[in-house]
Amino acid sequence: MTIEATWRASSDASACDLRNETAHWRADLDAPAGDPSLPNPHDLLDSALAACTTLTLQLYAKRKGYDLQEVHVSVRHEEAPGTYKMVRTVTLTGDLAANVRDDLLRVANKCPVHKSLSAQIAIETTLLD
Image (cartoon, rainbow, N blue to C red; front, side, top):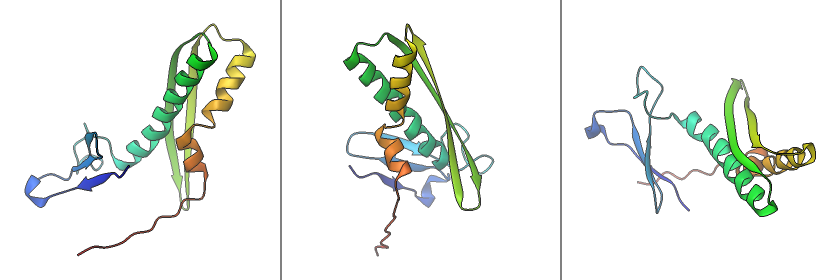
């Protein structure tokens, strides 16, 4: 699936529109230049890991019959020259034995976005006329 981002000067705003074949959303710069009610690109990246972790855990727990009542995932990032560190915290609610919690942590570390972000990433850019 391809994500497309579009910005137009006529919009009188810095926000860009994002879409794929089925959804539409927006992102902007950090305040004061942008709309603080919209996520910035780093928020979108961090939210991809949080969402994927949450969705992966709830699907896995249902399949395994675990008594998982709630998943809460928070992600923040720390930047330094040449590094981008994502710090993820997972909170699980339910009647979960220690071995089940360990299994869910193992699965959290295998969610598709975690695997993608942990891999070597290459970006190829083409400029069209």
